[in-house]
Image (cartoon, rainbow, N blue to C red):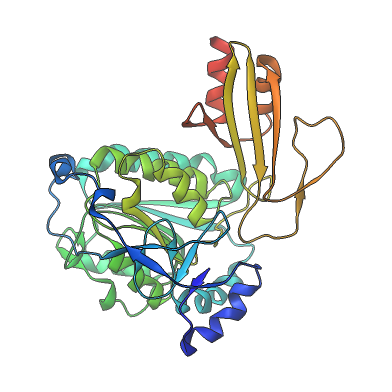
Length: 358
């Protein structure tokens, strides 16, 4: 956690230190323009996008760690931007323990129906196992969308447009500052330039959310949204879920988490998310690297399925194995988890199927 040493941040330290982060004074550098794609890509951005609110980004100086947070002035890349309210808001949702997890997927632009349907399918696929209550909404008015955010909800997944005036609705724009409060525990505003709206939702009562800095490519927004939905309901925290999702696309740095990026909406069967990397050593021999860990859980341990002994390893460490095709397929059958295979992110069940048929 990079933190500005200000008096107003002192109360937040008690929330942060529970997870034993490495705490450092926030330092950053100006972000070079070369880090961003050429503006010629603008023709491929979300169709019918209006003028979006600008964001001045900085590159944070980062210490050790696999997940990075930023409680300081400026808007960082490669770190979640948090504010004091995110940690104060967490207690508002503790009384819902044991209740179904409420998910509202909103389609406010008909051109994005395929993305909406794919996202809804990911939530529904896990609905029974995780006790999800999934609601689908379309073409909401300003008042209707405001009601969604002001009502008690665990996750609001908005698919549509965002402009300077706010989130586009059927009859105008909803600006987050106009809300009396936000009772959406988490959210994903998969719309162009939604950062400012997301930060305001945190200040109004939410804990964490995924947002964009700029215009986003239409097809790539769908890729990120679908993967994010599956990862989030598979037990990954907000930052891990978005980080894995945005690595699939060429404009991944346009996506970020605001609020407490370590926040978890659901828990997987493995309690914490698994990182699996597979590389092909020979046609039927594979190198497998397995790691488990989460920024909200410290001091735990794990034992990989590929390991024959009972030796355990601290969360956050990695173990490497070399296996044949049959062993890899068996390993992939143990859990529903994302796998980085020869540099491309896929799901364990899909990879196992490909290996069986190839």
